[in-house]
Length: 155
Image 1 (cartoon, one colour):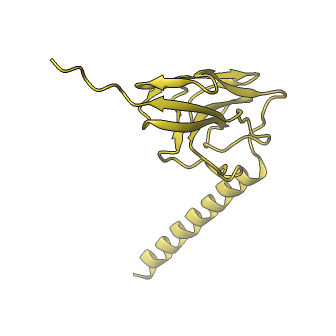
Image 2 (cartoon, rainbow, N blue to C red; image 1 turned 135 degrees about the vertical axis):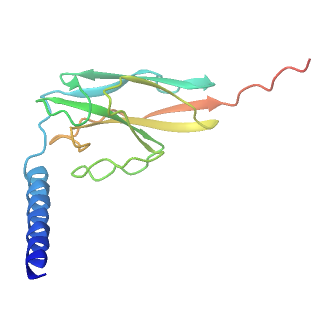
Image 3 (tube, rainbow, N blue to C red; image 1 turned 45 degrees about the vertical axis):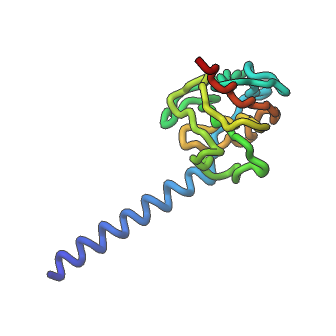
């Protein structure tokens, strides 16, 4: 019984040490952003009025888009911030919710259904751990208006 307790204690201690080391590595060495790195919207343009699904095309300069979980210098994957007034903590993983959409497979475009009305969109590049780079690569915030779909014509 004492042997089992000792083994359990050793496993727990090892797990705590691994978690502590992992956390420190992230905190001490954020991924580097390339000089003059940019993310931007190819489509839609700021001020666009759209009916129906919204197709969003992401642009990037001086960095490479790769899937989450893959570590490579000067790379990352897109996160789309929808109607976000305050940026997330730029030293922690970007949240994953309806307002913080992750494109961790390395996608460079998406088609989304947004409620009719005005919406703000902004891109934030995340590294292999979904954490913004040492110099966050963040687009300008754009505003689009989604129009209500016209009612089906009566037959």
